[in-house]
Amino acid sequence: VSITNSSASQLPPLSEWEAPAFTLAAQFRVGATLVLFLFAAVSNLALLISVSRGRGRRLASHLRPLIMSLASADLMMTFVVMPLDMVWNVMVQWYAGDAMCKLLSFLKLFAMQASAFILVVISLDRHHAILHPLDSLNSNQRNKRMLVLAWTLSLLLASPQLFIFRAIKAEKVDFTQCVTHGSFRERWQETAYNMFHFVTLYVIPLLVMSFCYTRILIEINRQVHKNKGGESCLRRSGTDMIPKARMKTLKMTIIIVMSFVVCWTPYYLLGIWYWFQPEMLKVTPEYIHHILFVFGNLNTCCDPVIYGLYTPSFRADLARCLRCCRRPDASPRSLDRLSARQGPHSGEQESDAPSVKCPE
Image 1 (tube, rainbow, N blue to C red):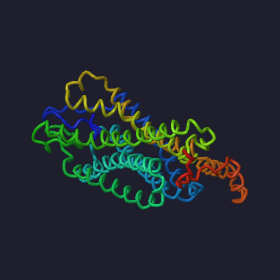
Image 2: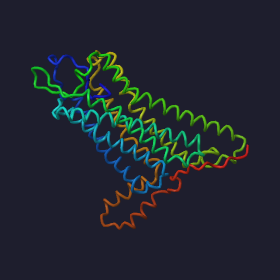
Image 3: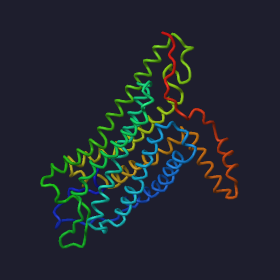
Image 4: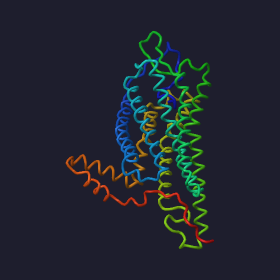
């Protein structure tokens, strides 16, 4: 298992290669990935359309680029990582040539980096909105700059994949694989490379997100204790500084970050174990790393579900789409009235204008 490659990249000499097979565990991996692919493709496309063209446009203007970027990163994971993983497991070896080996290895890591970094940007945005509410007027430009930086860093960090991966044919055997074999002189160099991407994909995002939400929770706790003596001042969300809509968005982003941590932690920890003790590949059941990789991909499906639970407009857009499919002859006006009845939207537009404090 490797973060940068779906198959182990530290291989024995080419003459000693033993061709892998499409085992029962691999078949389960492909079947489960196909189900996740279908759900993630439909749900993330629906989310992107809702936020860009549907009722999701009611979302605060500085939050819309964040949610659209998150959906875009999830779609990259869906349409690059999942199909690549399925086809690679079914075909066992690599048939797409050297150029596609380099390109798809690059796109895979680029999608994973972008997904992690955009969660960091969302966390920083929530941190600034809660701790510095008076700076809300600058949030649009600040978020755009952070998103540009996130996508640019993802591009730069994934670019080495274009040089270290290659399609190699085994000696005396009709078998070709897309691997890093021969790109590193010593095994420790490849381990260092994988560890670097583990840090940028998981450790740094986790530390930044933990820092942001810890400070947010400390601030909320401070406000609650500060106003214990004036219950009448604790309105809307329970504090005098955090409007109800902003608190709702905060809860949503915390759950999105938690889903990222829960889904990917087991896979990354298993990867570290293999890097430092490669002999464990021989004793660990094959189905273990298949299950953990599928579980990591589950995160791509979680984001639109979580967003839908906290966003009435997204649910209304879905209801409208479903009703349109069931009744092709329904008029657009009647569909608008139907979606408007799905639930109130008044709390969805987040206002970052600071609330008036109660006198101390």
